[in-house]
Image (cartoon, rainbow, N blue to C red):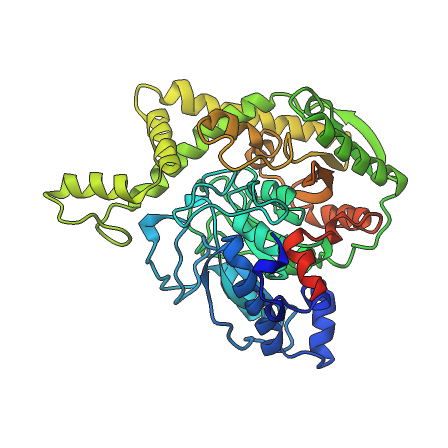
Length: 493
């Protein structure tokens, strides 16, 4: 996108929009900028830049920070539009909830508000978090800030695009099968999916309850560490929330990684991986070696089995979770239904998009009496198999490193007629969700002008180590500081 379509006065000061969260906190603390001015800078930038991206569904008028001394006091951000925030439209990218206003706050929103963060808007997403390209939104596709012809990834594509385009210092996201890591990789930003149970799912509208996990997308590992420290922690309102102490994730960022054992899955560097992407990931691993880490080959077989298991288990859970959208209690309702059956059928047919309906049908089929044992039960066994592979791998290493995706971002529409090919984009991310492990995507270079990511995977609740490794890597490279054309253009004004 060229600067000719932007308003120079509204694109924001380059130093401000590219600043880290720590740097912004310093500016605010020194009184060099006020929270109102900072929010205004990003709000004006959203107005000028986002029409060409479509990364946000709704804008929210920035309120005064709830805290003036919290860790995120005065820092603007955007929510993936799957998190409830009282009084704001919360759509999940669906016609079904296009006009629904949340009557309560999600725990994540409560905690970010308490920390002083300032909400600017709700980010576009694949409908009900089902997708790998952000083409499945009722509110239109999102453009990748690096190349408008490319997808930004999904389902948290709006969040990743907004951070990459410097519309906000950070954004929330959710990751069910790679939906934070894949768009972070495609958009050249940093994203973390924490351990399952680390971040409360209360008020985070469900897709697949045993997989969904909230996380962060930001420019750097340090920024993600600051934000996750505020989001994470036990919540009695979420039965899957882990009652574990949350460490200070920033405290160990500067520690040396000399002697760290990095596992390299041999099965992930095969014909399934585009060679240029493999080269970029290998170069990133070489940087970890140069920082003192040791590498060891490990086995993580059955990626194809993991993919198949996920696309049975997640749709099965979606089939159950989305049954509540029936036109009776809330959300979209068809006009003039003839009877209750007609109300249900037409409301769901008209309210859900094609991908959501596809997954509901697959899930309902897998749960049906004649096929439960053949499909659902076997998929659960495959899930345990995948978890076992990770357990054995972590007997040999401290973290696992590999690709996030088989290729760089693909063109919009490239996989629309072939859902199976679209699902293959998740082959390296889904196993992490099956095992409930923490995973990160860290910018690691470009292929054909489009970003690619390095994936880092840790043991359960070992997010601090992932942040440390990612931060040490980012001290040696500048991929995370590169700005896409839409952001670079503004620096000239």
